[in-house]
Length: 574
Image (tube, rainbow, N blue to C red; front, side):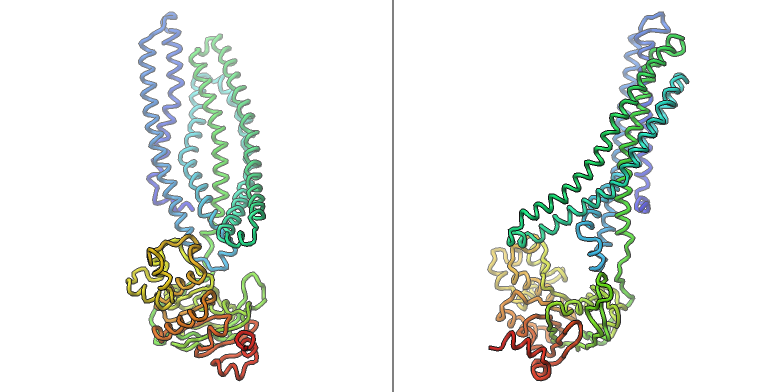
């Protein structure tokens, strides 16, 4: 995913450059403090007489260097954040764009909660990784390397302390990082599970309350959250062991520096100021290693999250558009040629088997059958929500796989039984498929869908705000808004997938009368459970176990189809 950094190369370079300035100021401070001690206080070069002027001048120089280092640190932080935040923003938009291109099959495979985690938390972890790499890592490495060099320039004897302490620190870091690294992938998976439970309960709140399952769902969420917390605690507990061990090594090293320094001062090899500087440098060196440990923790988590994001970005849409986006002489024709279909997770079990049927332009076509017989699966093949396993689906005499997805779906308007309503105004919900629609067009679509009556009864009319998921509307109102949206699109083919199930028969009858009058040239495919919804269609297909059992007008089916007569008798015969 490094290609996303190319746009921000300048920020990527400036952040570590300014960090070099900040660290350089930090490395100069101990040596200046040593001068104050040796010359300003002890007066080693002046017979033991201190020099207050040197103390003041060196002190002011130190303050100036600190201010300059502060400026460099601020600028480094600014550029690092500009780089990481823009980097994360680009990845998040690309990841969301890729998710929007997924087929239903791919979305189901990842799960909604996991996709939410990947597009939010995982990308945040990768942003932190970038920040640490161009700021935190540079700082700690320079403090570590620079501290060693500065310490050795004071006296080579101090290098013995570093040589003894460093292997212990490195061994400690490697051990704890190796233990923690696998936990971060598990941690993100546990977060997926929490998000899944949360998403299901927010979306299904009415069902949970209707079945008084609040306590059960609290327990389910508690279990998922407990697993997340448990994994987090395992990671934190592991690193909680590391901190005191590192502190012990640090403090022992400081004592060793004091001891070596005392010996060298006695031998005349170093000055007390050098010892003080050496103590500061050893602290900087070992603290840099400790900070490096925390950076490795961020890096490990970022790498784990990066792999999960890459899975999304590298997942090619299973349904890709063709190249045809031209016009066709025929408008509104749908044809199934020997179509069979199986869902990816169902093995060889076929939902649709050897299905052949032609729906003519401008025809009102009903599809009837028992629950689970394959009605919705069949029409899902028309806009390519799924692809047929065998056979061909044609729209306007062109194979649906040859169309660009935009061109194909531009010919089709779909209204589903489960109406997807967005948390915006009724007007925007209706105009979703045609944002530039005029007021008169929106009103006309609402009239056809029999939605105007309930819309006008609301205080704000079309500008009434709808709550998330459309919970402020009844089932019938949501369906009518969804039907208005489909009608407004003014597509060649209009698919109603059991969209009128929440409407009373009188409202449904008026809807179909308006559709016939206003959209007589539009091909209308109506999937229904009720014969009353389709009996006035030009033709009706009866589906049984994924196969075409019968097809004809209502009268023809009453005469020739035993299945249709059984459904009619069970629903309408008195």
